[in-house]
Amino acid sequence: KVVERPTTQNLGPHGFHNVQCTIKVSSTDTGVIFGNVVYDGAHSTDTNVVILNDVHVDIMDYIQPASCTETQFRTMWTEFEWENKVNINSKAKTLRDFLEQLMAATNMNCLTPEASLKGDCQFLSANLYARSVFGKD
Image 1 (tube, rainbow, N blue to C red):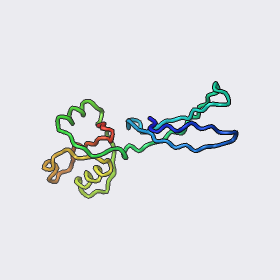
Image 2: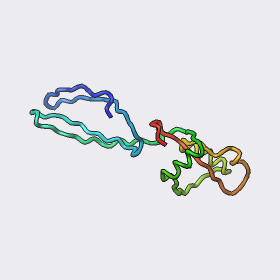
Image 3: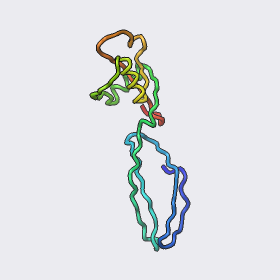
Image 4: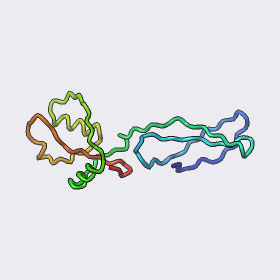
């Protein structure tokens, strides 16, 4: 959504004008912003459209660590398709170091209680959670 609509400009032949405007992003679903420029030709019936290149937005810039209750997390777990298998190579010395690196890289918060993460074993299971600046889980 355009926040500040640029003023209308009249250009002479071969003229140019730089325009800047502020847009409001309301969702992070796709991570892409589309746009176009519409202008009139010599006659008011001559309308032209220039499709602009897509602007790709890194969703990680809009994700913040957050917290929720275990009940809320389980409800969202069944509602959304969050579980994805991803192969990861890490140079972390311990599983706990790996978890810390993962949380830092993904801007996520660990919901698993600290007491459950203590001890030394060969596997790690933790619930991570974040929320976008737009309030989306």
